[in-house]
Image 1 (cartoon, rainbow, N blue to C red):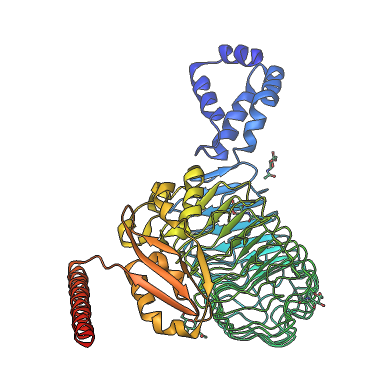
Image 2: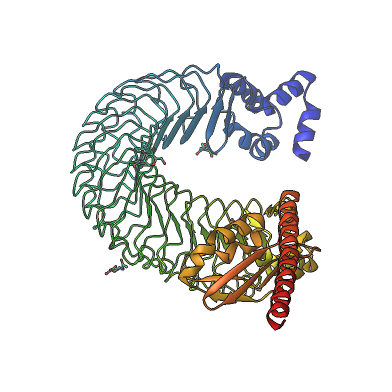
Length: 629
Ligand SMILES: *[C@@H]1O[C@H](CO)[C@@H](O)[C@H](O)[C@H]1NC(C)=O
Ligand SMILES: *[C@@H]1O[C@H](CO)[C@@H](O)[C@H](O)[C@H]1NC(C)=O
Ligand SMILES: *[C@@H]1O[C@H](CO)[C@@H](O)[C@H](O)[C@H]1NC(C)=O
Ligand SMILES: *[C@@H]1O[C@H](CO)[C@@H](O)[C@H](O)[C@H]1NC(C)=O
C-alpha cells in the first residue's frame, strides 16, 4: 500500500481515476481496457515499484476479471440466476469447472454451448425453458462428471447425446417431459453412479436400457407412468444401492426382476398399483434396509415374502387393501425399528406377524376399519417397542394378555375403536407406559385398579366414551379424582347414563354418591326365575344399577336391597325354596292408586272376613244354645 500511495501521488488525476476503475473488478470493462491501463503503468517511471504493486494488489483481482458475465457470480464456480439469460453464457473464465444456471430462459444446448469450457466438470441447469439438446452438445466436455438438467421441458433426447461421457458420474433429468428413452441413451456411461429420471412421463423402458451401467448406485424412476418393467431390466446393476420406482402405474412385478440387485439397500415402490407380488421376489436382496410397498393395491402377500432380509430397517405396507396375511410372512429382521400397517382391510392377522421383529421401536397398526380381533400373543416378542398405535380400528375387545410382554411401551394409542370394556389387568406390568389414549371408544366403566402398575403415567385420554356412572364406576371415578393431573380431557370425560348423572364429569362424582351401592349380591339360578324375569327387566329399565340382574341366563346376581338415592327402599327380593320373589314398591301415582286400592280392598276384605267370622261365631253360639235347650 505504501508503494501504491507513492505511485498514485506521482501520477496525474486521470490515472488515479483509471486505477480506481481498474481495481473495481468483475464489472463490465473489457480485458482490452485493462491491458491499456497495465501498459500505461509499465511505461511509467516507477517500474520497480510498480511491479511490486502489481503483484501485491492487481494480480489477485485479475483472476476475477476474466469476464464474469452479467447476472453471474464467478468464484469457485460460476452461478447465474436471471430470466434474461437465454443461452449458456459465452464469455466465461476459460478455466470454469462448475457452471450452474438457475431460473433462466435457456431453451437450447447447441454444439457450441460448451466449446470454450474444456475443463467443465459440472453443468447444472435448473428451471429453464430447455427443449432441445444438440446431439453433439456435450462432445466437447468429455471430462464432465455431473450433468443436471432439472425442471425443464425436455421431451426427447438424441440417442447418442451422452455417448462420449465415459467419466460422467451423475446424470439428473428429473422434472422434464420425457416420454421415451432410447435404448442407446445410456450406452457407454460406465462411470455413471447416479441416474435420476423422476417426474417425467415415462411409460415403459426397454430391457437393455441400463445394461452398461454396472457402476450405478442410485436409480430413480419415481413419479412417472411406468406400467411395466421387463424382467431383466435391472440385471446389470449389481452395485445398485437405491432403486426408486415409487409413484408409477406398475400393477405387477416380473418374477426374478430384482434377483441380481445383490447390493440393493433401498427399494421404494410405494404409490403404484401393484396388486400382486411374485413369490420370493425379494429373496436375493440380502442387504435390503428399506422396503416401501405402501399405497399399492395388494390384497395379500405371498407367504415368506419378507424372509432373508436380516438388515431391514424400515418396511411399509400401509394403505394396501390387504384382506389377509399368511402365517409365515416376516423373517428375522432384528434391525427393523419402525413398521406401519395402517389403512388396510384386514379383519385380523396371524398371531406371529410381528414375532420376528424383535428390535421394533414403533408400530403403527391403526386405521384399519375392519380390524376386529387381535390374537392374544400378537405382541409377544416386541420387548423394545415404545410406540404402539392401534387407533381407529374396529376393536371391540382386547385380550387380557395382549400387552403383557410390551415392557418398554411408552405410548399406546387406542382411541377411536369400539372398546366396551377392558380387563382390569390389561396394562399390568407396563411400568414405562406414559401415554394412553382411550378416547372415542364405547367404554362404560373401568376398574379403579386398571392403571395401578403404570407408575410412569403422564397422560390418559378418556373423553367421548359411553361412561355409565352406576355403582361399577365408583372405583374408577375415585382414581380420576385422585389423578386429575394425568387426565387432560377430564372435563369432557362425562357420564352418558344413568339419567340423573348424564353430562356429569366423572371426576365430579363424589364417593358418598355411591353409598347406596354397599349391597350384597347373590349369584343364583333356577328355572323358576324365568317367571320373574319380566319383573327383573322392569326393574332394570327403571333403575339401571340393577343391570347385572339379568346376565347370560345361566347365573344371576342381584342386589339384596336397592334404594333410590336419599329415598326409601323400593325393591326387595326374597329367596325361598328355589323361588325368587321380587317386590317392588311403585313410586308413580297410578301405581300408588293401585296400591291404595289393593290396600282398601284388603282391609275391606279383612273386615268382611272378621264380620263374617263373628257372624259365624254368633250363629254357632245360637245353634249351641238351641241344642243345649
Ligand atoms: C481459474 O484460474 C485462476 C488463475 O488463473 C485461479 O485463480 C482460479 O481459481 C481458477 N478458477 C477455477 C474455478 O479453477
Ligand atoms: C422368523 O424368521 C425365520 C427365518 O428368518 C423363520 O424360519 C421363522 O419361521 C420366522 N418366524 C415367523 C413367526 O414367521
Ligand atoms: C377395502 O375397504 C374399503 C372400505 O373400507 C372398500 O371400499 C374396498 O372395496 C375394500 N377393498 C377390498 C379389496 O376389499
Ligand atoms: C414415539 O412417538 C413420539 C410422539 O408421537 C415420537 O416423538 C417418538 O419419536 C416416537 N418414537 C419412536 C421410536 O418412533
